[in-house]
Length: 310
Image (cartoon, rainbow, N blue to C red; front, side):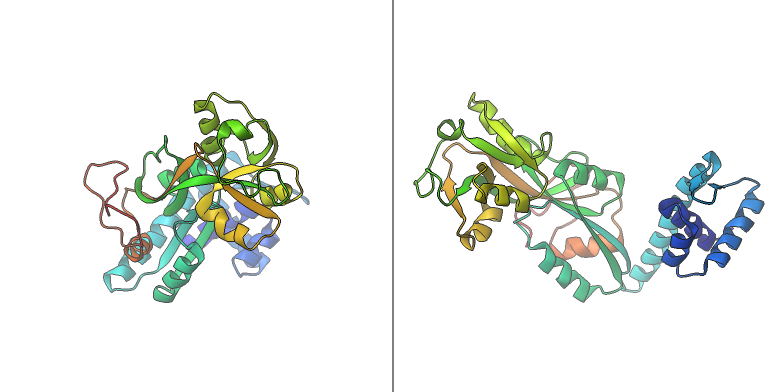
């Protein structure tokens, strides 16, 4: 048994197709199939159930893939640690980011990181803050940029406060409130709203603000991306509360949208989150670029740098 066989098995498990797995591994299908068949003979079990149309893991295959992924990750980490001992940063860096991140210019940050550490393979994924924080805790992500209501904080991870922000009201340019100096939640509670999907931290920021004010609103349209939210607003279908640092630069160039300050509106905190457990050389290199110092021993969710990362 060797690491290449493990890579082949994991590729077939993820693609459920021998041809696509061979393409992913840059090998001809006959060679991949031959190596997997040899591994099955060595183990004395079938890893895959095959038919002319389907490929599925057997129970033995599922058990093997779980261990194989751990072995491959350990081998990758060992190679990265060895390279780091000579001053070379390599390996993989998995980054998570919310779609409304504004405290850090993530594309610029990744460009700068790649220029300094070209041997690192960077993987970026967007998502909701609670899912990204869980991925950091589970080791699926190295770092993540999150946005949380003031009443919440990422748990089980090291975190650094990047910025505090308040929401603004976003309305279509011809709306009755466009151009007013400010509004309260009570003044807009009867409007039709566009917002993020219920149950997400992005949605909770506004839901909590209305609940604290003792108000109920109608969220008729739910969306997972800001672009759809702003398009619905521009069409006059509703209004929304969005983080000011994110939406203000975009609304400035969009004549179809108008922004209005909200006196008692939602607030959010943007965080940088990373695992407190043995960060990889690639992750440590990113934390160095962000000027984040080492975590305080025994302190969960600390703010080790004591301020905003640059």
